[in-house]
Amino acid sequence: MVFIRKFIPKDKEKKHLLIAAFLLFLFISPMLIFGENSHVRIHDNLDSNVAWYKSMADHGQIVAPLGATVPQIMDASRNAFPSQFTGILWLYAIFPPFLAYALSQIITIVVAFIGMYILLKRYFIKDRDLYLIRIYVSVAFAITPFWPPGMLSILGMPLALWAFLAIRQNQASWREWLVISLLPLYSSFVLGFFFFLAMMGFLWLRDLIVKRKWNLRFLGSIAYMTMLYLLIEYRLVISTLSDSGAESHRNEFIGSTNNLFETIRLIFKNYFWGHFADPTLQLFVIVPISFIVLWLLIRNKRWLLERNFAYLFVLNIVLSTWYAFWFYQGWQPLKDQIALLTTFNFARFHFLRPMILYMMFAVGCAILWRLGKKWRRVAWTAIIAQIIVLFIANPEILYRYVMPSPTFHEFYAEDEFAQIADTIGKPQDSYKVVSIGIHPAIAQYNGFYTADGYVNSYPLSYKKEFRKVIAPELEKSPVLEDYYDTWGSRCYVFSSELGKHYDWDKNSTKTIENLELDTSVLTDLGVEYVFSAVPIENAAENNLQLMEAFTDDESAWKIYLYQIETK
Image (cartoon, rainbow, N blue to C red; front, side, top):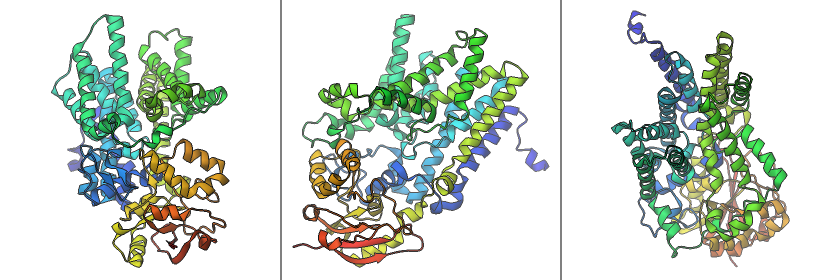
């Protein structure tokens, strides 16, 4: 015991920092304990990004030239994927996929905690006796169920704000400049920091109007970080500005379809429930506490005295409102005229909300803390409750018990797909495949070349050609037809009988009774084999010949291998 005490700091804040570190370790421990048998998010994660990274690493395409395509993923342009200067790609190039995934999660959680903690300590929760608030709100922020491939695009924002506020006040050292120099290497411009830098631009403009100060150092720092992102994501920049590239399927996006009632409903939905890409789980604790603080400030006529809370509270509402109105049908005529408004999702200003919400939560708890012992208990209980909510939403709990899903190992089913490759018996780059009832990313992860996939940007001409394959199925299902025609990033072989479900596991009894595909178009695209998660009863009518069905104890799927018969 004496030996252990030597490592326990006497300073109370440092003791709680150690406890915070233990909580973060506890949160990520399932990944460390279970490894590939961990349950992790599938949507916009295993079904796409992880397979992209592995495919590019395996085929030496991380540093492919500008004009290159990625043949194993729909022959999509290499420019449609992150550039070689994006850190997460190199994790997958250096380490086995799950280890790379886990390391990325750890990096994000640690940086998120540090960023929020030093931001609160320096600018928002300065009081020495409020260390519990800044430490444990930072813990809560760090373990929000963030979008894994986003890296530090959202959870790195507090660290960036810490740096920019210091530069704005002319109090920055080399550390702040180092932060804004390194963050672009492990985050995304279009999936987070475009919106953050726009907010910094608005802050600079506000200072210019109110204080009549140009603050060229602050403006220069915003321009500097923006320039770094444009250099790092040069592939995206060049493909966007170049007229020589193929027209993207994004040009036919139709997103603004909600009427006024649906838009207002979406405001409330986003305000209380959040968004799947940046879930903050604010409904049960943060929102009620924010309204309690608001009521106390109004009752005590202190609303204008607590400006930080007021600004954050209003900004939170503004972000939800902006998000909802981006999908209001009144926008569509303007989007039809300006291509950028169609291809770029400006609704993503909501990516600022996790930072704003947890800053508001921290400031609100600090206000309660100063009101006396009773309210101090309320604040402390709220913080503990929010951490408990987030621990319950740990991916291992969420995807094992609440939303049962395959593990990382079961999802990618490497042994089973190795058997399939052996049965086909030809080099994988000599033919293409498509999948029905499962994500094409599984085939991609296992080295197969696919004519289908989930890609953010690919040629519109390819989308239209591929549509011919599934046109009869789309005609049977208005939902699928709208899904493909107005979005289409999931270029899948849809079946009207399966709907928008791509996880028909080996315990399913589902069958496809009447599939109607134009397999001649698949043949023209180089496809020779179809992987189906369910039996196709009328396979012969679609020129499909069942070769074999595959199962594996460690796989989530039963795969029916069909060969396309050429006439």
